[in-house]
Amino acid sequence: MRYLALLGSHERQGITAGYLQAVLDSLPASAEVETVFLRDYDIYPDTKEKPCPALDEIEAKMAASDFWIVCVPTYWGGMAGVMKQFFDCMRFRLVRMNSVADTLPGKYKDKHYLSMTTCFISSTENFFTGITDQTFVTIDRILTGAGLIKVGEFVGTGTWGTEAPRPEKLTECHRLGKKIADRPRKDDNTLKRYILLFFMIAIMALATMGLQAWWFGVFAAGKFWLTYATFVVIFYVLLASILHFFTFVRHRRR
Image (tube, rainbow, N blue to C red; front, side):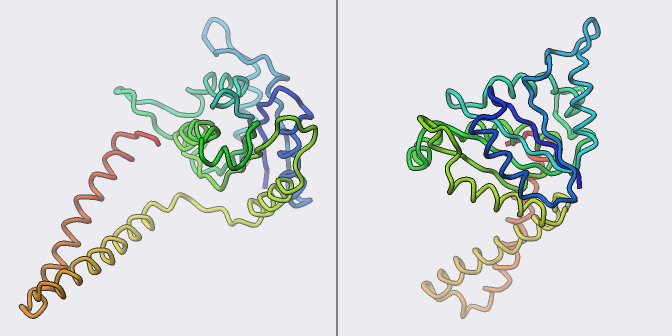
């Protein structure tokens, strides 16, 4: 298994890098691991007039890896500009677009990724303010748009005024490292999710209609099960069609 860590921090040996290293240290000794410190590269928009060799080099590493670890600090409620610049420049290398500008998964479909970020504020404050949410939303929008499958995420809070990673957060990173090493690789189980959706609708409809039948006495009328079955099927078809339209036909990523 080959792992590629993309580090978008300003410091090579900072707190954010320390959390990333804790994850990498927990991977099996047999794993092939490489870290790309984005500040080492001259990254700029790739054009016909001025190609960007750095993007070619990093893209080759991404293509050769099975698992990506995206690690970037959160500044001003979003990911640090180093990583944002990289993803912006990689846009047409990560995805393909059709004639109506729908974003379609590219050649990296079905790879896996872990997202990591850090921030100054405490875990409690971050829970209520969600300062790191936009960082994860951006990462997920980009990588799920490219067809990758998310395995997990990590938030290293309380970095203000500290000079080293927090021990309890390092422990969490070690657990994540073991998780992504032991987790069997699998594709995005779309069919399984639709089956689960059907059973969720069936159970909720049975509970709702069962209470109505008990309250109003319609169960004795003999039409309860027929009404229940037709309701579940019709509701499922309509809901599944809407979900399919927005997630697959229109390719609108969350």
